[in-house]
Length: 237
Image (cartoon, rainbow, N blue to C red):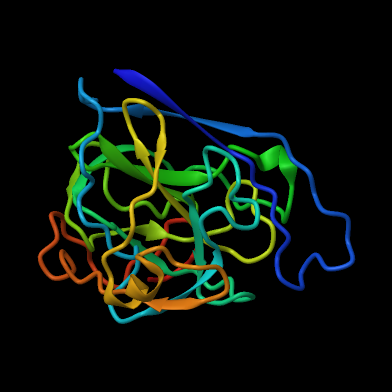
């Protein structure tokens, strides 16, 4: 087994929420996760990725690539997705591409807003795409992750629910990014959804996008009974 270290500088000024207040400065947070069966060669072309939520649903981009606090080497290709700029309602996160669950964490409690002591204590899941690339889904709700480590997932399979875990300022959101699992280099992989085409597959800050992520929703690689209720958070999908 090998370890991949992810670090993210999670400093963000939420629209309207922190206006007039001193910007919160936080240290880099380190997230260690174990990756199963890492390739011996550098990552090749990543599989086609689709926006990580239910097809037909519209989501808002709180922060896009190289925007806001996404300026560090570990976050420059990341996105923060939510229902709206001030809407913290939980929603179902779906696999952007096919793969296998390499690592997950779901036992962290909900965190206070902008509390730096919760840096690196977010619930998350990492999907290994099998070609050397992976996707990281962060800030999930406690006990909401659905598949187990090692489970194969199809694109569109439900992974968990968004929540306020780890260092989050303002609106609950999903932090999504892709990474070369061998070199630890974060990757610029454009989305394939039609609605992102106007921006080259790279969603932009302060815009809404509709997902075309339909594969796996009806015939996923594991069964989910609906409606799903998180074991502790009480959130319903």
